Amino acid sequence: MDKILVSGGRRLEGEVRASGSKNAALPVLISSLLTAEPCSYESIPDLMDIQTVLKLLKGLGVKVDGDLRSGRVTLAAGRVDKLEAPYDLVKTMRASFLVLGPLLARFGEARVSTPGGCAIGARPVNLHLNGLAELGAEIQMTHGYVEARAKRLRGAKIYLDLPSVGATENLMMAAALAEGSTVIENAAKEPEIEDLASALNRMGARIQGAGSDIVKIEGARELHGLSHRVIPDRIEAGSFMVASALTRGDVLVRDVRPDHLDVFVLKLREAGVECSVEPDKVRIKGNGRVKGVDITTLPYPGFPTDLQAQMMVLMTVADGVSVITENIFENRFMHALELDRMGADIRLEGNRAVVRGVASLSGAPVMATDLRASVSLVLAGLVANGTTEISRVYHLDRGYEHIERKLSALGAEIKRIKGQ
Ligand code: EPZ
Image 1 (cartoon, rainbow, N blue to C red):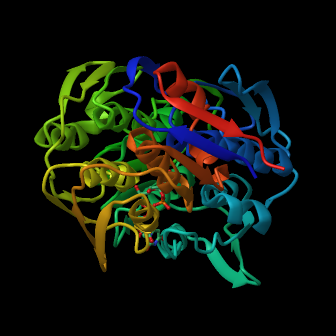
Image 2 (cartoon, protein in one colour):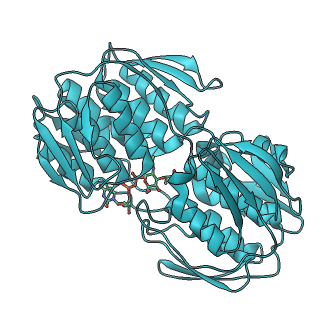
């Protein structure tokens, strides 16, 4: 397995471009299952998770063309000859579970492995399944697989107990081909939901209200192909913004939608970070030690759980105390244990982490445990005294496109050691 070595103490400066959003691209690529016509996509990031979802779609019989190095992919689901998403793919990448809604809506049946848990939590799918049952699907659970059937899904009023991103996406795609109209109440409001809805509407779906907590979908008989460019990755962009603040740098992050990061920018400013925002770029200047601020993760537009680990690193070297409350996932503080090994002072109390700022971190061998925890260890390495060696970087490769190349270009001393 590869490792990444980071030598701390370098100030980052220059420009970096955010890649296309992983969490927008995954459901949008899967939505190509809803039509037999070719669907062309741009700004698709070259990530392990994207390669996994393309492998899954190919396994279903979808024709996959294009080259991830160009960010362009064309999918054609004209000859889908398999309606099953196997356990080995779904367990490596939970978003594979999103094929359930489209397969059911277009072909009337699907057999999809349940994703099971992951490092950050149990990750249940009850909201997905209850919603599909509301749309008329017959659902059975056998041997760890969901087996679903429906002659034709019919529109319904669905209330989500939690504003689940994945459940909203699965149900929006299923309802797009259902008979009649569907209302999803307490829907997730993330920008990735809006991006999926705009892609579906380009395919001939009639979806209103995406991005709000009430989404209305008028079912269509069939959908057609489209061309779509996914939105920038707000979480990758936020990670680079923290890198600049941490190293007291001066970094311009281009191709970003700052309006997708409102609360995050507010919190950086509250901590004393200088953020200049324009419609498609953000300049982050770190001027001295930041102040400890409290963080509470919430569904969008609240503080994003996917930026909690990155913000925690900034708080470990802030002046004062920061209380970080994680409300979305039940086990998303594993990076704290590794940061403590680098000299941070973090006390965990249930879903709260009390972070007391220290003068500095010290480089150490650390282990990545999940995607966003892995990038927080890279960020800590940028500002720690000495060298940090990060193992299990396959977690990092799932969600960050060529991160050592992008950080080196900003002046970081970072390199990848190829695994044996
Ligand atoms: C999406 O996961 C993202 N993944 C996650 O990003 C992100 O952290 C999460 O949304 C929250 O914003 C993708 O978009 C591929 P949820 P998802 O369903 O859809 C509970 C990353 O790092 N829940 O909104 O799985 C669940 O347990 C990843 O890129 C149920 O109880 O998140 C969790 O506590 C990590 N029942 C909460 O809702 C359900 O049926 C939010 O989950 C579904 C979810």
